Image (cartoon, rainbow, N blue to C red; front, side, top):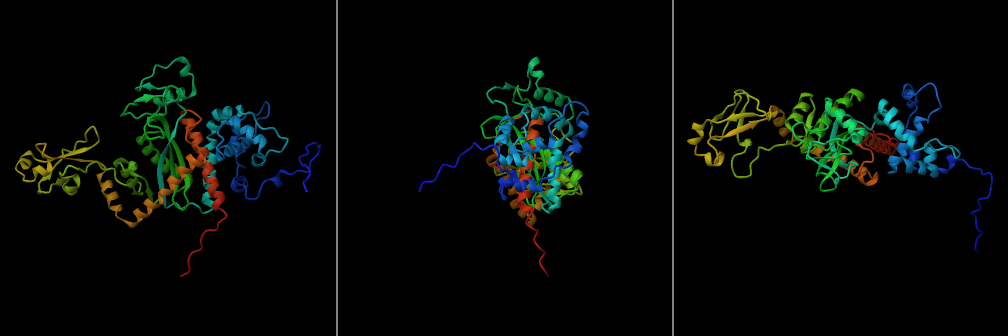
Length: 452
């Protein structure tokens, strides 16, 4: 028998409880169980006036932003529309059926003001990291570091060739340009002092012109992650222009901040060859962190002649010994490229029968040596260990996090401009990823130690 239509909507009162409409296994319900923002209002109180009209609850705005980045709704206008309609979103944001959703303009006002002045997005991120630590998801022994390129909100077709831009008054008044010009005068410029940019964006000048993104060329920012390899919890996140030197510098920043904020210092850290520079390896060894990182080595030759590895370094005498037993000495002067030069005797090389296999195109052999060559040698010895092999395999977890960012969270292009805009988006993205991992793993008890 055909049933009657049941879609009547003419009732004036309904017996309705929002709590009962959210499934027990809903993602937002599981995230809400591990999210604590009770501290937020107290932290932001100094940034609000004691007079005037009541403001929008900051916890409501943070919860709405977390919903947006969890479900790839980064447009604040669209986010407000979705919270208006979706019962689960309303429940997570502590809104009743008759409560008014804030205007989308409220978010930009607070983001450029109170949120950045108080650095509240980083505080929210760090509070989630602490919950992960309390839940036993962070071991603190092995870290991994890597970076992934995210396209900036800047057209690659509207660019200025070179590093000089004749800024108009209207451009100087835009926030990204103001921040960029202020950063140039500060201690941490977004550009590489040793290499001028090939192109700049007039709308987002801090973004780097790069070939490493999803297009052949584009403007981009690097999403830098530092993770604990036990459960792939993100311990720190940093936004940098897409330049390898900036990514390496960000590693030191993240390691120091992680130790300062959480008291965590790893025994070893894993990374790809981009982090295997002498300066980076020297810094890690100096701070007693084993670098499980491939050494960035340009000393190998593929033309059949002797490579630098064929020359033995005598630390006691500070000389290199060639395959023929002759010594190469240095004046001790550090050259402009921050490299020492060890030179053989022209007299020894001219009479040497191995010259065609050593320096066939020059009168004598030169060997460059990095000031951190000892750290590079120590790292090469670690590359032969089982611990290095385990770290290399476990480091792949960070690649899965980047895949989640781009495919599940759909963060392939930024919506906000400037380095501060990239930092805001990256912090919210990392916070959501940690919350999802915490919601998934926190209820799982840690494995019991095996009995003897």
